[in-house]
Length: 484
Image 1 (cartoon, rainbow, N blue to C red):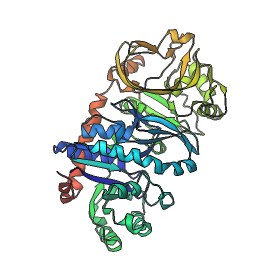
Image 2 (image 1 turned 90 degrees about the horizontal axis):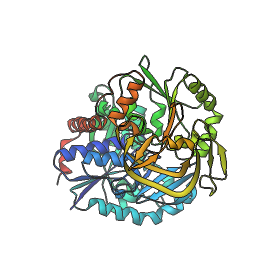
Image 3 (image 1 turned 30 degrees about the vertical axis):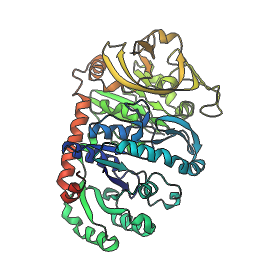
Image 4 (image 1 turned 180 degrees about the horizontal axis):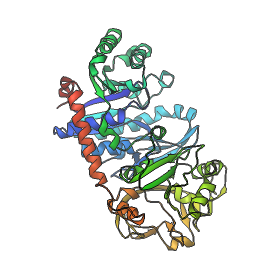
């Protein structure tokens, strides 16, 4: 029999993703055949799974932690927000349509069949499945038809461990409050809880554990400190961008405008890990720094809307000034589309704006089309002649005279474009900066020697370090209970 445990949170961003990844690596290091699973995810940070569909990048990372190939079944329902009220719906790796928030609530019960089918598939031949919830079961207004938290747990009869984030404050109230408002059926699914992101002397929370025990009867499975190694792992939620601090005094400043519908922003993680790179995320209301050597325009889930917002922020004028000063620009996916002269949407895929003027830094035009490109790709940089590995997830076709100078060769075909002066380039390939050779060549073009360590190996080592940290603080009896 495959064992299963589900981590749910007292709120969003309590650290479930990292804990699931850490548990997967911990168990894999013990020789357990383990797999991750998340019934429903909401994120524009998507990955192309090894079986060729879209999943949340968090589940891609967790599959890496488990040392197994990634699969669309690890995240059967992925919601990719396109506006304040609506999302594209991905079911078992493929686009299944779009829905506004209220409409999706009515659709959820029909998606449970796909969730359960994928859950059975993921568990096949495994000793353990570690499931990640979404948001919080305390959102009882969303309980009807739920597939992400207690709706799944009760349907699949999976025990739940509740995760509370002590760093944000009020963790006792959030745990006890969750216990109070859950129905009897849902409350019975919770087997215990974990305190996450603790700073300082853990013994100071001994009385807190007694208080939670008194109110709920739940045992504590561990008090997890602030995991230093977690900072070396890719983040999933764009909320983390609000907390990233700026560096300073480094050789190269790279500015990244934070688009309203920013997608796959973990493309920038390898640059952030470089010791001589100061990666600056430019928020709404801020200016693109005049001393930036490179501006990277990241992916977007809504190119036209984000391009309009880009102008509203005045970033178009900042970018033109940056280029006049000799600064460089790289656009990735939606960012590449924005750099062209025009984006058209004759099919109304992104809404009712049929055409918008681009930033005009590349002589290309993009036409949105219903067919979506989703694939892992082997590639080569046409600029630096080094190997690349990445993936494509995009709508639209981009053509124009600057495409005669491709930025990348993907599986033998030209992709992207480079301006005549070489200052501006764009590509549909995500994962560009993950290539150590590409980063080294890019930095060298700015007069910086090196290129840092092997990025993928650094992520793998970080997963091992997180697993070691967790094994030291989680209840060994509880961990042993997960063993086959």
